[in-house]
Image 1 (spheres, helix red, strand yellow):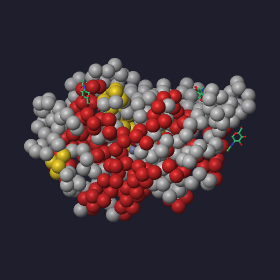
Image 2 (image 1 turned 30 degrees about the vertical axis):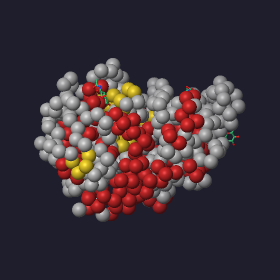
Image 3 (image 1 turned 180 degrees about the vertical axis):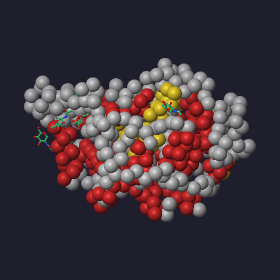
Image 4 (image 1 turned 180 degrees about the horizontal axis):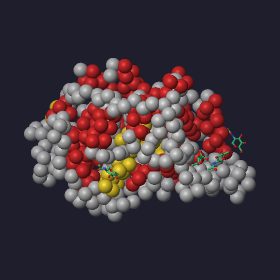
Length: 472
Ligand SMILES: *[C@@H]1O[C@H](CO)[C@@H](O)[C@H](O)[C@H]1NC(C)=O
Ligand SMILES: *[C@@H]1O[C@H](CO)[C@@H](O)[C@H](O)[C@H]1NC(C)=O
Ligand SMILES: *[C@@H]1O[C@H](CO)[C@@H](O)[C@H](O)[C@H]1NC(C)=O
Ligand SMILES: *[C@@H]1O[C@H](CO)[C@@H](O)[C@H](O)[C@H]1NC(C)=O
Ligand SMILES: *[C@@H]1O[C@H](CO)[C@@H](O)[C@H](O)[C@H]1NC(C)=O
Ligand SMILES: CC(=O)N[C@H]1CO[C@H](CO)[C@@H](O)[C@@H]1O
Ligand SMILES: [Zn+2]
């Protein structure tokens, strides 16, 4: 009942917000259902979705499913009634993770007061003392911030000039990546598991399943959700998962000003540090929306971007799981996408990273009931692990406080004015050509009003989720 309410109210808006990153894949996959025969039969007929529309059925085959999985027909209908599981334990202040060394003790949660943080699901103000200090740190990092204008809302169709300017390396429109982006795992058939947008009401269900099958993942967490579910974040961390940053309010980052980007990242780093005692060194831009300006600010804030594997415009490793709850992708389409991902993964020399979410029950059910059991039974076998370990790094290297700086330099090391061989200091010191005024504090035109439709829509929906916190 409560779940159905959550689903019906929130999801259509969120799906609209997530559309841009699935468009290329959908353009292909929804037009051409796979002719492959299915070992696990898809539902007999097209399934009615949460929104009442009838979605096409896709063929897929899975090596295994979870015997306790919810039937796909229930997952698609929006009437799934699985209970949220309680956390396995509420972690006490002073507890220390045992799976890596030198981690600080968990802070006292009673000191983490929501009133001390910005409004949830809204880009934080840029004139607070905290944000001004982070702006100064970015400025002092010596990393040049390219002086390129923010994009406007609407993605590729509404940003012709930005799309044409390949020098900004905008992932959203064309899939441009830099060496500093993590897009795959180095070892073939290794899956760097990730789950985005939590912590959320059904994250404990995912955690319970992962513990049962001895897997861990990388959680890209939204700062506003951390305020709502701090104990869930602590359980993620204490049970061996990598915790990473997914911004405060889930905006399209390229639409923000430099200062807004700093506020989004800074507050998310801070709330995670306040709840766990450690500050993540990895982040994922919502919708994968990153360009060289956003990359540079992330680097100056000691954050390494993690994307998902993209082989071409039509082969992106996005399950589409986010769209089940909103009724725009059927579960069979997600499983069809998954089959294509595994099949494509076997053709490349590296491992891979896949986009999945833990915000909605439907996404968690499709992962724990179908995708992960199939992945565990896959032939050839897959190695499934968090991104940090798939990169051959230790958990110490996932967080600033525990990072062995001598052997694993943090992203902004070497770019400080003090350590730079270039004199002059500030953002101009590293002086990449054409970076103009370069200062992190310099305003770029018209961005504040540019958060626009997609961001606003996603924001409204996420507010519903957080305000339903008490109901759930
Ligand atoms: C669980 O996974 C870890 C890491 O992959 C491995 O070292 C350990 O042996 C596994 N434990 C069991 C009980 O399978
Ligand atoms: C890769 O995925 C695409 C769909 O995204 C699919 O059409 C294609 O057949 C897949 N390739 C392989 C080798 O499985
Ligand atoms: C590495 O450097 C960071 C930032 O300068 C610092 O906070 C951290 O404590 C250092 N790591 C260790 C293990 O000392
Ligand atoms: C950069 O300089 C700041 C002080 O300006 C210092 O706090 C920080 O630790 C330095 N970072 C690195 C990576 O050296
Ligand atoms: C940025 O750095 C420059 C040069 O070091 C300095 O003049 C300016 O005041 C700094 N701005 C901020 C906001 O810290
Ligand atoms: C050592 C180091 O990280 N240097 C980087 C400083 O920042 C520039 C970009 O502004 C990078 O190109 C360097 O690699
Ligand atoms: Zn997201």
